[in-house]
Image 1 (cartoon, rainbow over the protein chains, first blue to last red):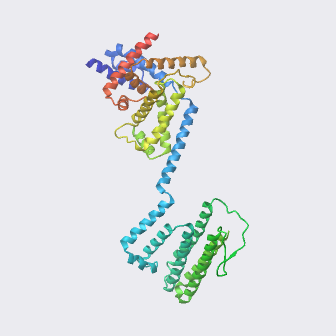
Image 2 (image 1 turned 60 degrees about the vertical axis):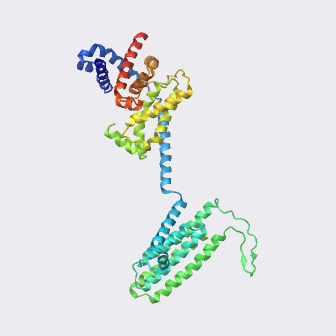
Length: 279
Length: 180
């Protein structure tokens, strides 16, 4: 029995050496007392090894499977990335839920007090978080666009207030935020158009129907939200620029240049947004 | 498993396409040969080899090298898949040899014909072994696995695998002598 185990071990050791390219003679030299038994087994093994090595898949088939697997890997990776980011509604709910946590932790009173907070105030972050939550939870794209217009105007008002206090340091960042909100009005409107099933078809416009008070109502449906946004944007522009112009008289000399630059920027941003909506 | 292979496998687990391609390059032919020694029909061999790698790709995220060498893990998939296939098919057909031999350099029809015969003979001889010997021989020579790796695929001890390897080679020697 012990001799049999030994030959099994020796055979395995020699096989490993054959796999690595050593010759039968090399092995036999190390086991002379087993050579007669070992030699025919190693010759059989070598024949087996050589014949097995001759079995090869068709190169075209091999390449085809390789590219199929790469395609699967690519799809798998894309799926994983999509899963990591999550659909947009999930991200929006994540923002909203985080805000609920902020509200719970900070308290409802704090949230109410944050409404008038300015960028240098401790509650300003709460104010911004609440705005993000409202945007995330908006029922429709139009509601979301309206909120962006509303918050752009808030930032403009904050620019005016900061300038009046002589705090010009925050003004450029606030101007950027006005631009960001106004850009999003256009993005939301564009997405709505895209999701609506492609380009709008220009149908013959029916005659306007006079409303109960004599006001003319557009009952065509198509284009109404866009018109509404345009109107809102125009009104917001007027109010924002009015507040900013009014602030010029109350602003200390040291902050005036920043405010004047902000007025130019904000005016341009509103005009661009109106122009984009008009296209 | 070498340190390099551990590193490649770790990257493949994380979804690195290049790493998986390296493993494919390393193991595809071995898996193919292993399956080839157990089945006859070329289309079956190709389908199974392909399916083994698709399964491996799907499952690699859950592979942990600590308890099982990668080669053993992969060949376990191959073996289980082949057993399922054989159970379902239940019939064995003659193989088409044309696309399954090594590409001999230069136009040498005599060598190609000779090689075909040798491979056919090998396949027939392996088929005459007992199922346990056949399992060990096809994994050891077709899959080029070590005794320890074969033991992990089959769930046997290395001692048992060595014994089956020895008895399998002794049987093949006798079979080959009778054939001559």
